[in-house]
Length: 238
Ligand SMILES: Nc1nc2c(c(=O)[nH]1)N[C@H]1C(S)=C(S)[C@@H](COP(=O)(O)O)O[C@H]1N2
Ligand SMILES: [Mo]
Image 1 (cartoon, rainbow, N blue to C red):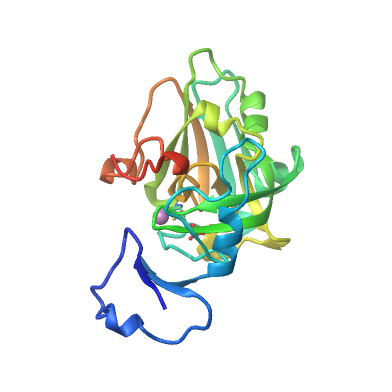
Image 2 (image 1 turned 135 degrees about the vertical axis):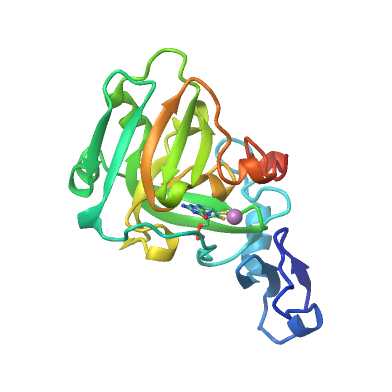
Protein backbone atom coordinates (compact mmCIF):
# COMPACT_ATOMS: atom_id res chain seq x y z
CA UNK A 1 0.00 0.00 0.00
CA UNK A 2 1.37 3.36 -1.02
CA UNK A 3 0.29 6.54 0.68
CA UNK A 4 0.72 9.84 -1.07
CA UNK A 5 -0.08 13.40 -0.14
CA UNK A 6 -1.97 15.78 -2.36
CA UNK A 7 -0.37 19.18 -2.69
CA UNK A 8 -3.19 20.72 -0.66
CA UNK A 9 -2.86 17.91 1.87
CA UNK A 10 -4.50 18.56 5.16
CA UNK A 11 -3.54 16.66 8.24
CA UNK A 12 -5.14 19.24 10.51
CA UNK A 13 -8.11 17.12 11.45
CA UNK A 14 -6.06 14.40 13.05
CA UNK A 15 -5.46 12.48 9.87
CA UNK A 16 -1.97 11.07 10.05
CA UNK A 17 0.10 9.04 7.67
CA UNK A 18 -0.29 6.06 10.03
CA UNK A 19 -4.08 6.29 9.96
CA UNK A 20 -4.01 5.86 6.21
CA UNK A 21 -2.35 2.47 6.30
CA UNK A 22 -5.68 0.74 5.99
CA UNK A 23 -6.96 -1.85 3.57
CA UNK A 24 -8.71 -0.33 0.58
CA UNK A 25 -8.34 -3.05 -2.00
CA UNK A 26 -6.08 -2.40 -4.97
CA UNK A 27 -5.91 1.37 -4.69
CA UNK A 28 -3.64 4.02 -3.28
CA UNK A 29 -4.99 6.40 -0.66
CA UNK A 30 -4.23 10.05 -1.17
CA UNK A 31 -4.97 12.84 1.25
CA UNK A 32 -5.95 16.19 -0.12
CA UNK A 33 -8.02 19.21 0.69
CA UNK A 34 -11.45 17.95 1.65
CA UNK A 35 -10.45 14.48 2.76
CA UNK A 36 -9.25 11.25 1.23
CA UNK A 37 -9.50 9.77 -2.19
CA UNK A 38 -8.66 6.39 -3.56
CA UNK A 39 -6.54 6.22 -6.67
CA UNK A 40 -7.07 3.47 -9.20
CA UNK A 41 -3.59 2.07 -9.79
CA UNK A 42 -4.89 0.16 -12.81
CA UNK A 43 -6.46 3.22 -14.51
CA UNK A 44 -3.37 5.27 -13.71
CA UNK A 45 -1.10 2.67 -15.29
CA UNK A 46 -3.32 2.43 -18.38
CA UNK A 47 -3.50 6.20 -18.82
CA UNK A 48 0.27 6.51 -18.55
CA UNK A 49 0.61 4.26 -21.58
CA UNK A 50 -1.75 6.38 -23.72
CA UNK A 51 -1.14 9.39 -25.96
CA UNK A 52 -3.70 12.06 -26.80
CA UNK A 53 -4.63 13.06 -30.33
CA UNK A 54 -2.54 16.22 -29.85
CA UNK A 55 0.54 14.11 -29.07
CA UNK A 56 0.66 14.85 -25.35
CA UNK A 57 0.56 12.01 -22.83
CA UNK A 58 -2.97 11.15 -21.66
CA UNK A 59 -1.97 11.75 -18.04
CA UNK A 60 -0.09 14.96 -17.14
CA UNK A 61 2.95 14.51 -14.89
CA UNK A 62 2.31 13.99 -11.19
CA UNK A 63 -1.36 13.00 -11.65
CA UNK A 64 -3.17 9.83 -10.53
CA UNK A 65 -6.55 8.62 -11.74
CA UNK A 66 -9.67 8.44 -9.59
CA UNK A 67 -13.00 7.15 -10.82
CA UNK A 68 -15.45 9.94 -10.04
CA UNK A 69 -15.11 13.68 -9.46
CA UNK A 70 -14.25 14.44 -5.90
CA UNK A 71 -16.26 17.45 -4.68
CA UNK A 72 -13.61 19.98 -3.72
CA UNK A 73 -15.78 22.49 -1.95
CA UNK A 74 -16.41 26.16 -2.52
CA UNK A 75 -19.40 28.35 -1.74
CA UNK A 76 -22.38 27.08 -3.74
CA UNK A 77 -24.68 29.36 -5.66
CA UNK A 78 -28.41 29.00 -6.18
CA UNK A 79 -28.79 25.44 -7.51
CA UNK A 80 -32.11 25.68 -9.36
CA UNK A 81 -32.19 25.77 -13.14
CA UNK A 82 -35.28 27.97 -12.82
CA UNK A 83 -33.35 30.69 -11.01
CA UNK A 84 -30.26 30.51 -13.21
CA UNK A 85 -28.98 33.39 -15.28
CA UNK A 86 -25.59 33.99 -16.88
CA UNK A 87 -24.27 37.34 -18.13
CA UNK A 88 -21.99 37.51 -21.16
CA UNK A 89 -20.29 40.89 -21.17
CA UNK A 90 -17.07 42.89 -20.97
CA UNK A 91 -15.17 44.10 -24.02
CA UNK A 92 -17.93 43.00 -26.41
CA UNK A 93 -20.24 44.74 -28.89
CA UNK A 94 -23.38 42.86 -27.80
CA UNK A 95 -23.59 41.90 -24.14
CA UNK A 96 -26.49 39.67 -23.18
CA UNK A 97 -27.93 37.50 -20.42
CA UNK A 98 -29.44 34.02 -20.72
CA UNK A 99 -31.64 31.92 -18.49
CA UNK A 100 -31.11 28.15 -18.37
CA UNK A 101 -33.64 27.42 -21.11
CA UNK A 102 -32.04 29.87 -23.50
CA UNK A 103 -28.49 28.77 -22.68
CA UNK A 104 -29.28 25.11 -23.22
CA UNK A 105 -30.81 25.75 -26.66
CA UNK A 106 -28.09 27.85 -28.31
CA UNK A 107 -25.91 25.06 -29.75
CA UNK A 108 -25.61 22.23 -27.24
CA UNK A 109 -22.68 19.85 -27.63
CA UNK A 110 -21.40 16.73 -25.88
CA UNK A 111 -17.70 16.31 -25.26
CA UNK A 112 -15.76 13.48 -23.65
CA UNK A 113 -12.74 14.78 -21.79
CA UNK A 114 -10.36 14.43 -18.88
CA UNK A 115 -9.95 16.83 -15.95
CA UNK A 116 -6.92 17.34 -13.74
CA UNK A 117 -7.00 18.75 -10.21
CA UNK A 118 -3.88 20.50 -8.94
CA UNK A 119 -4.01 18.32 -5.81
CA UNK A 120 -3.00 15.38 -8.00
CA UNK A 121 -6.14 13.56 -9.07
CA UNK A 122 -7.50 13.23 -12.59
CA UNK A 123 -10.85 11.94 -13.83
CA UNK A 124 -10.73 10.52 -17.33
CA UNK A 125 -13.31 10.15 -20.06
CA UNK A 126 -16.27 11.87 -18.47
CA UNK A 127 -19.08 13.00 -20.80
CA UNK A 128 -20.10 16.62 -20.47
CA UNK A 129 -23.05 18.39 -22.09
CA UNK A 130 -23.02 22.11 -22.51
CA UNK A 131 -22.39 25.00 -24.83
CA UNK A 132 -18.95 26.02 -26.04
CA UNK A 133 -17.54 29.27 -24.72
CA UNK A 134 -16.58 30.03 -28.33
CA UNK A 135 -20.26 29.88 -29.32
CA UNK A 136 -21.16 32.36 -26.57
CA UNK A 137 -18.25 34.62 -27.54
CA UNK A 138 -19.24 34.72 -31.19
CA UNK A 139 -22.73 35.85 -30.30
CA UNK A 140 -21.35 38.62 -28.05
CA UNK A 141 -19.02 39.89 -30.83
CA UNK A 142 -15.71 40.41 -29.03
CA UNK A 143 -13.93 43.70 -29.49
CA UNK A 144 -10.50 43.46 -31.06
CA UNK A 145 -7.79 43.05 -28.46
CA UNK A 146 -9.74 40.73 -26.14
CA UNK A 147 -7.21 38.28 -24.71
CA UNK A 148 -8.88 36.79 -21.61
CA UNK A 149 -12.17 35.57 -20.33
CA UNK A 150 -12.86 36.08 -16.66
CA UNK A 151 -15.22 33.33 -15.53
CA UNK A 152 -17.45 34.69 -12.77
CA UNK A 153 -19.19 32.54 -10.17
CA UNK A 154 -21.31 32.80 -7.05
CA UNK A 155 -19.95 34.75 -4.08
CA UNK A 156 -17.21 36.45 -6.09
CA UNK A 157 -15.18 33.40 -7.19
CA UNK A 158 -13.44 34.12 -10.48
CA UNK A 159 -10.98 32.32 -12.75
CA UNK A 160 -9.01 34.01 -15.54
CA UNK A 161 -8.50 32.00 -18.72
CA UNK A 162 -6.49 33.10 -21.77
CA UNK A 163 -8.83 33.52 -24.74
CA UNK A 164 -7.08 30.84 -26.80
CA UNK A 165 -7.68 28.26 -24.06
CA UNK A 166 -11.30 29.34 -23.70
CA UNK A 167 -11.90 29.07 -27.46
CA UNK A 168 -10.95 25.40 -27.65
CA UNK A 169 -13.59 22.98 -28.84
CA UNK A 170 -14.07 21.36 -25.42
CA UNK A 171 -14.09 24.53 -23.30
CA UNK A 172 -17.70 25.11 -22.29
CA UNK A 173 -20.38 25.98 -19.83
CA UNK A 174 -21.77 22.59 -18.84
CA UNK A 175 -24.86 21.31 -17.02
CA UNK A 176 -24.88 17.50 -17.47
CA UNK A 177 -22.12 15.09 -16.46
CA UNK A 178 -22.33 11.49 -17.64
CA UNK A 179 -25.93 12.02 -18.70
CA UNK A 180 -27.14 13.35 -15.34
CA UNK A 181 -27.63 16.94 -14.22
CA UNK A 182 -24.61 18.22 -12.32
CA UNK A 183 -24.82 17.73 -8.60
CA UNK A 184 -24.83 20.84 -6.46
CA UNK A 185 -21.37 20.06 -5.07
CA UNK A 186 -20.01 19.89 -8.61
CA UNK A 187 -21.41 23.28 -9.62
CA UNK A 188 -25.12 22.89 -10.45
CA UNK A 189 -26.89 24.17 -12.34
CA UNK A 190 -24.04 25.32 -14.62
CA UNK A 191 -20.25 25.27 -14.28
CA UNK A 192 -17.40 26.13 -16.58
CA UNK A 193 -15.20 23.40 -18.02
CA UNK A 194 -11.73 24.20 -19.35
CA UNK A 195 -10.40 20.65 -19.28
CA UNK A 196 -6.83 21.23 -20.43
CA UNK A 197 -6.04 23.63 -17.57
CA UNK A 198 -5.98 22.62 -13.91
CA UNK A 199 -9.51 22.16 -12.64
CA UNK A 200 -9.63 25.27 -10.47
CA UNK A 201 -10.08 27.24 -13.74
CA UNK A 202 -13.38 25.38 -14.22
CA UNK A 203 -15.50 27.62 -12.03
CA UNK A 204 -18.58 26.02 -10.48
CA UNK A 205 -21.93 27.86 -10.00
CA UNK A 206 -21.19 30.17 -12.92
CA UNK A 207 -22.85 33.57 -13.10
CA UNK A 208 -20.99 35.23 -15.95
CA UNK A 209 -18.33 35.35 -18.63
CA UNK A 210 -16.51 38.65 -18.86
CA UNK A 211 -14.31 39.07 -21.93
CA UNK A 212 -11.38 41.35 -21.28
CA UNK A 213 -8.43 42.97 -23.01
CA UNK A 214 -6.51 42.87 -19.75
CA UNK A 215 -5.72 39.99 -17.42
CA UNK A 216 -7.34 39.75 -14.00
CA UNK A 217 -5.93 37.00 -11.79
CA UNK A 218 -8.79 35.17 -10.07
CA UNK A 219 -9.52 33.60 -6.70
CA UNK A 220 -6.73 31.01 -6.66
CA UNK A 221 -4.37 32.95 -8.90
CA UNK A 222 -4.05 35.72 -6.30
CA UNK A 223 -3.48 33.05 -3.64
CA UNK A 224 -0.25 31.69 -5.07
CA UNK A 225 -1.50 29.39 -7.81
CA UNK A 226 -0.16 29.69 -11.34
CA UNK A 227 -1.75 32.23 -13.65
CA UNK A 228 -1.95 29.87 -16.66
CA UNK A 229 -2.25 26.41 -15.01
CA UNK A 230 -1.12 24.06 -17.78
CA UNK A 231 -1.04 20.55 -16.23
CA UNK A 232 1.47 19.24 -18.78
CA UNK A 233 3.92 21.94 -17.70
CA UNK A 234 2.98 21.39 -14.06
CA UNK A 235 2.08 25.07 -13.72
CA UNK A 236 0.74 24.51 -10.21
CA UNK A 237 2.11 27.46 -8.26
CA UNK A 238 3.25 30.95 -9.19
N1 LIG B 1 -17.22 28.73 -7.72
C1 LIG B 1 -16.20 27.90 -7.44
N2 LIG B 1 -15.72 27.15 -8.43
C2 LIG B 1 -14.68 26.29 -8.21
C3 LIG B 1 -14.08 26.22 -6.92
C4 LIG B 1 -14.61 27.03 -5.89
O1 LIG B 1 -14.14 27.02 -4.75
N3 LIG B 1 -15.69 27.86 -6.19
N4 LIG B 1 -13.03 25.36 -6.72
C5 LIG B 1 -12.26 24.98 -7.91
C6 LIG B 1 -11.34 23.90 -7.64
S1 LIG B 1 -9.98 24.29 -6.69
C7 LIG B 1 -11.50 22.65 -8.19
S2 LIG B 1 -10.30 21.47 -8.01
C8 LIG B 1 -12.74 22.29 -8.90
C9 LIG B 1 -13.35 21.09 -8.24
O2 LIG B 1 -14.53 20.69 -8.88
P1 LIG B 1 -15.40 19.54 -8.22
O3 LIG B 1 -15.72 19.97 -6.83
O4 LIG B 1 -16.60 19.39 -9.09
O5 LIG B 1 -14.55 18.30 -8.23
O6 LIG B 1 -13.67 23.33 -8.93
C10 LIG B 1 -13.14 24.62 -9.10
N5 LIG B 1 -14.24 25.54 -9.23
MO1 LIG C 1 -8.55 22.51 -6.64
